[in-house]
Image (cartoon, rainbow, N blue to C red; front, side):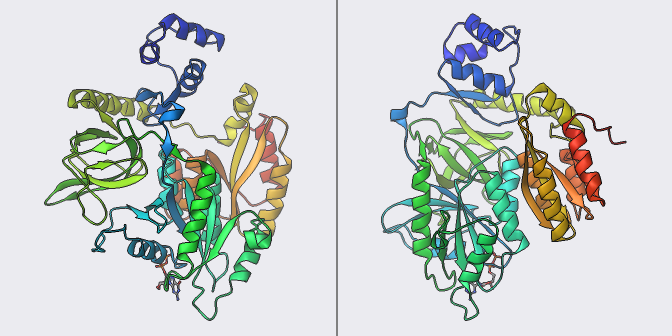
Amino acid sequence: SEVATMMDVPVTQIISACMSLGMMVTMNQRLDAETLSVVADEFGYDVEFVTSDLEDSIVVIEDKPEELIERAPIVTVMGHVDHGKTSLLDYIRKENVIAGESGGITQHIGAYGVQLEGGQKMAFLDTPGHEAFTAMRARGAQVTDLAIIVIAADDAIMPQTKEAIAHAQAAGVPIVFAINKIDKPSANPEKVKEGLAQMNLLVEDWGGKIQSHDISAKTGEGVKELLEKVLLEAELLELKANPNKNAVGTVVEAFLDKGRGYVSTILVQAGTLKVGDYVLAGKNSGKVRAMHDERGNDVRSAGPSTPVSILGLDGAPQAGDKFNVFADEREAKQIAAKRTQLQREQSVRTQRHITLDEIGRRIALGDFQELNIILKGDVDGSVEALTDSFQKLSTEEIQVNIIHKGVGAITESDVLLATASDAIIIGFNVRPMGNARQIADKEEIDIRMYSIIYDAINDLKDAMEGMLSPEL
Ligand code: GDP
């Protein structure tokens, strides 16, 4: 009934649309996310999920094509530790002062905007690394349009470089490589590109399609050209948003400031946020008292792809929480209460991530076409052998994807990637390290450990055929 009202169609039509999908529903029934999307689509609507996992908190948007205008790309910088992520982010922030503004001290607010000489804008998420990127994604927030992956030219392709690539690819985010530290005498950018080629990642000057640029985050050489390449890549994505509606977006970070109260940095993704708007972010709400950019300047309104730090929320929402603007406090408070209740209900229900035991049943139901696997092993040889064998298990019904593989223990980052991509983790002669086990238990991620190649292959094969005997 609520969906019918939102789309302004008779409720009987919604019921018959559900029936044609084989579902007998009543007016008061809560539809799941997938059904909602399919039904809305039938009536020419798109469904935007305010928080992807809370079925009740939805708004139906109806952006017409002519309402959409180009928006700036939102970029994340990833790469191996010490390869220069922070240096690059700092350099870009300092150098690209928006025309006419004083180059005052910038503060870290979690994200910042830049304007290039040609006038084009970009937004950067200022928390480098794929952990932050995937943690947000695991919470259902895909904010990043493009990833810059920094690789030091005086080093090789390192484990975290590979991780960053896997995380960007799993998210379907295009990559631009920044081959850094070319000011160093020991730098050898060609060696890095060769390493990428060996991973089947061919950059442009190696005859491939992936953009890359040699830079020095220290001297700034090549950074301008790098950003131009990022913009070119962004153009292909045809990023658009409707600026003329109530703002929606994602929380980047939030903290309590002794003097000013809760300070939240949010990234507006569509619509325009204004001072005085009533905002609901996660479970927190409040009227926007003031907005600032990363230079501490007052901002009166913020359109799509603009990061701003806002004052006025009654608490600190979590990074990755969605925010929406509501007509008034009452409406926002109602939804906030509903969300809290739903979250309570949901924490009782289990989080549904795929497990090996379940694969066969899901395949039989026909709602499962891709099995994502993260594979970690003690030596390269066994990782490659298992990759080959696993991929050969693909059938017409189900595709086996190795979304990330590597040598070394199962890390927290592997578990995060599994959470965000609904993958199972297979360890060969390796175990979870640090907090990885704990997080996996909490998120209900299936980790399987083997020491005999044959066992690993057989288990997967049996699971896909629905023949695996449950793990005791
Ligand atoms: P992150 O861990 O990836 O964020 O790396 P940082 O930005 O902290 O850089 C690690 C170290 O490399 C620091 O000592 C930087 O000063 C240095 N560094 C970063 N970029 C360059 C560069 O282009 N040239 C040189 N010579 N040093 C760099």
